[in-house]
Image 1 (cartoon, helix red, strand yellow):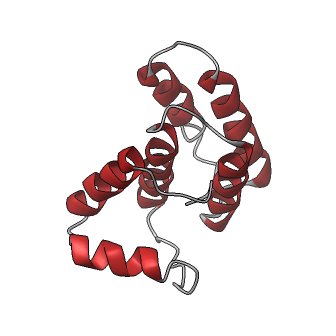
Image 2 (cartoon, helix red, strand yellow):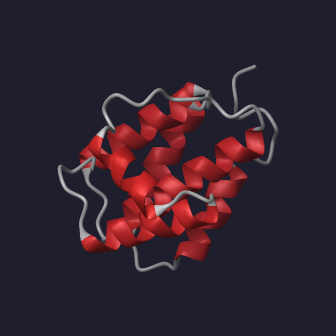
Image 3 (cartoon, helix red, strand yellow):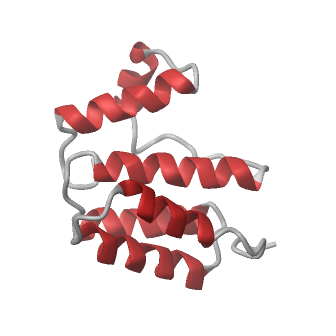
Length: 124
């Protein structure tokens, strides 16, 4: 929805994530309809925060383009997950650099996971 629309590929990716999380299609439709009023809940486990951020990245990437507005929302979401500001900015910058290459997603996933390998990516 960051770019003003939810295309078919994005909707399919969203449903895959929802299914993995045990969220029904009806619930997803309700969430989409009320997305501006839903309260964010910070996961306590840093692994869950990383997983949520990765899921959002996959949804952003599914349509084959990464727009500036999507990057801005991704960075704001990373900050809501309590990712350190410098790490969030570097991660988004790396995604932007990777998105204009032909490199497979696995290469970016390795970079993505590298941001969390030191154990100090999140604010205390």
